[in-house]
Image 1: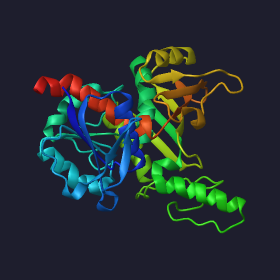
Image 2: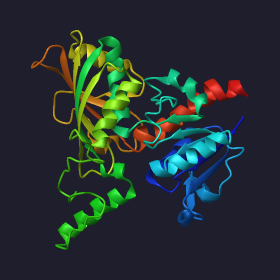
Image 3: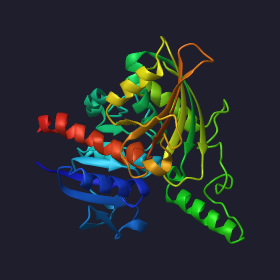
Length: 341
């Protein structure tokens, strides 16, 4: 049995990754339909190595007969079209921030809380978490099972692809301008991103945190455990693909680096590369194009009781967005939609 799948935002970075991953993983499709804004309608996008699909106009599309919608068009667009698709009978897996904290919408990372998918029927919508949250909770889950996590302090080093194609273009154009001694122009980021870092992602909130930092806190609580305290500092860095995180964790009982490594090596979706030597860790360059969450530099924190630090790296376009959505869809068809049929 195959499914009819629509990909909303099919011309964007994440949408293209969704199409690629659906093909790579041989998702059971009878038809795949890329959707985008009117100005992108008629463009062609690749599906697998040999197939080319024509983009259709989202505003004019009839979702009746669609089984699954993979959605990554931006929160404002998703707020309008995700409920329309859900009302037409499709299950929407939404990659935007709009539905994540809705109590009737499950927020899912398949390696962490797959059972939450079962609640999809309340609104026919499943939310994909923030990219930085996804890779962090994948690394935290096996440790939380070993010794309950009390507190997490995380600093992120987030690539420009998290800001879309405009962010990638801005880094490229600014870098070229600097080498050519030309004017450095900025339109996407609040400050120059080439050869710089910016401690500001999303809007500022009243308490001084940014919305990106709030997302990591709120989403971790919803996905993993509401009792976990999270303090985040989110930073944009001049890297094209791949988010990195320095994660400091306090547990309710002692956990050694050796215990942590063993638990992480057994965990799905995780690869431990942790050698205390030059090149004995993973950087964004190595993780780009890969599906795993890489954990390195696992070590005790002697400044607090039951403390541990680690370095976590993942491709934000794949596991941080498109792959996670497709994995949710895989679980959905394996455990729920087939049963419903």
